[in-house]
Image (cartoon, rainbow over all chains, first blue to last red; front, side, top):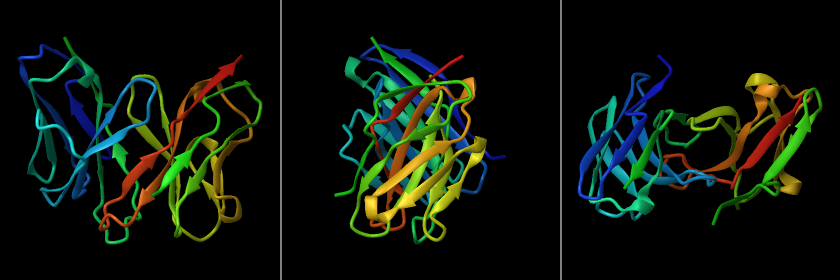
Length: 115
Length: 116
């Protein structure tokens, strides 16, 4: 299995809703990532987990709450989002190495619309 | 700080023509360089990567890229473009300073259109 699976593919939520994005990989990768991509823009890093521990938070607002319950799963919990949070949310994974010489495997993303 | 520049926002080529997408990076040490492709509404697929060694790198789908340290460039090439190559292409540089986590910094992307 060489894929990163993200669910749901599309999500529409109101500003008072609570929802979660899910990401799963079975490649034995020990680093997992959340990226946010606005329309016609490159992806921007949000969070990095390594060995199920949060290692990088790129100053993301607290209305985004990541969780890594085990080595195969990564969640992104959403609460009280704003319309400007509408974007494609991409999950990725990689081997954890000391040199950083790895390539990411990306999922197909969740298209989030906040109304 | 590391940065990546893709000078061409939009490129149009005819099917069967050759292609070169430009990428320039700014990084003090040996960079880790990547090219990714993204079809509309999809995730990113790794085309190829360069860490060290041979400066001409072969990737998937018939793509190759050449690392030129003197020009701080990592241009992507394909000898004959197919209509299915129409997509957004991102050049990225990895930041090995982040404790082994490959924090990718992406260029703005180049949108490729292919005319029949």
